[in-house]
Length: 550
Image (cartoon, rainbow, N blue to C red; front, side, top):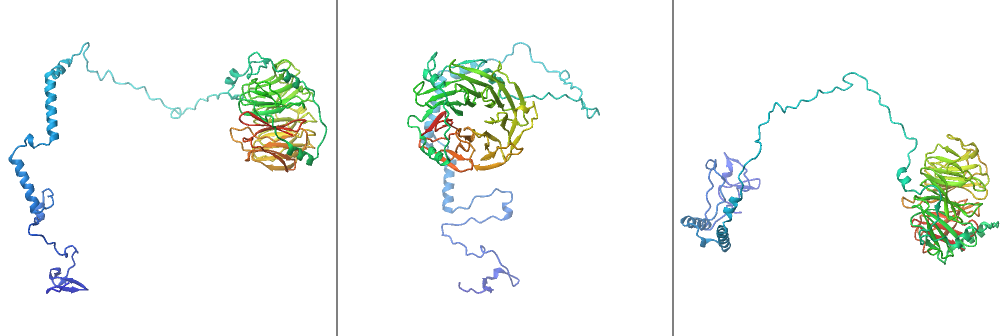
């Protein structure tokens, strides 16, 4: 920057004399020190009015160059000099005004506006005239405010509580209306034509004499036998019932494989693997209306198949008479049963309400001989000792108790022995089939336990605990460990592992064999071994049975 006379330099800053007062430098804004903008001769700025002139006035628009201001003033003068003529409007505005004029001419020609006035009715009121309401007559008189007993310093009157129900039944009214009538039910297959009789071959198999094989295999031989068993090539898979399978059983005949299955809807299906009766060897019946939770063939009379259902009925299948006889009946809630005598004439049943009933089939009627209420809320499994039939094992909430049937009372019965160690509810508990010296339990804490019951002490010792995934969820039947009827030391159980399989364990916890097949794509929750032949049965949630044979 060039130096001009009269400028002052302070601390490297150049200031002109206007920036000083009485010789003292005054610092101003940088905007004030900027060089003013130069304009062309045609452009002149409008001077800013003073503060006093601006008081009470609206804010003016920004100053424009003279060239622009002149044009705006010229347009204003032209508009003031002459009125706006139609010729000065745009084409669109002219068309709009013409449409309006034509519409008015048309409405006037048809006299629509006069007709509109004629249609308006005169406002007249018929009947009574509205009168003013008397405010005094409509004054609402409120009742006197009641005082509470506490304000009146009085004691409250005691109200009697309603009596507690002795037992709550699960949808008892609906079940009573829906379930089958009392007495025998005709044994008519629903998958065959009406009034069709049972196939003769079914009656022949049903009445076949039971042949017991006393041959005992070593553990190594037994393991090799399991490995030789595969899914049957002649239709090893069949849909036997309509819905999820809750229980299965093998008929003890050895000439052919005859199987039974009970489903969620109360159906009972029979399947002969090597027959063409019914639908490819399948006959379906409906003796119940709710899940068939337990079924078993009589050990002394193989012609007798007993089925128990949640609908509160226990029925016996008589193929010779072609009927389902009613053995025992309550309102609802039956869960499990087992034979209490060697001739299978006496039964022990358990229900969802913690009761164990003794039923004698030789007594007329469908009632029990005695009813015993246990301390537990529910009974999930009842099993009788295979040798000492007086001992009944009951799977309770988280404890397995063994009772003496001769010492059972109506309530508060004391167990002979108990099996501890379970942290959640128990699904099943079974004695070993030959001697009863072992008990296998299935618990929802994902453990299968084996106990020593050779001596019934107050606390049975735990031998083995096997970790096994038992969480099936809502839509699958609970997994249950079932003994092989031919052995006292091995049992079978379904598995949640992938690929799907069925596993056989030794009582020591050692895995003996896993049954797998490409066709087995679902969980086989319910399993059972044949009592005499090398055959394994498994049922899934869609009503299908899988058979593994050697």
